Image 1 (cartoon, rainbow, N blue to C red):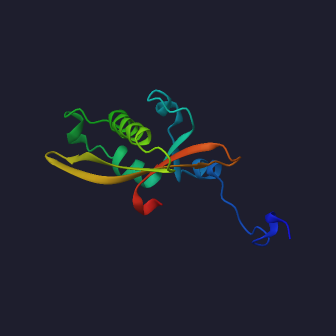
Image 2: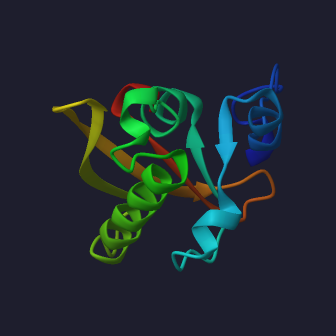
Length: 130
């Protein structure tokens, strides 16, 4: 038996490209390049909509924006990636301002793995998205 049939016939496949097209993953590759990433980068919709894009109107006057939150996330992801040699995962925490005077610190996973054509890609997610 060849290795490609070791587990039987493929029943279903959901590609990274499909996940991005469906909005399950948010492609932030262009923004990530500005932070030194050289591979495609996506973040889960749960992380993006729950924390990065979650900017209540009362926080706009406190310097909060989607661009700023994404910048902070990608900066910390790059630092974590650089200090996590020899592993496919980097773990770090980030604090998001959720309301005036109220921050929420969340654990983040940055996972490097194969993309749709076995190229290296990075996915940034919450632990429950793993």
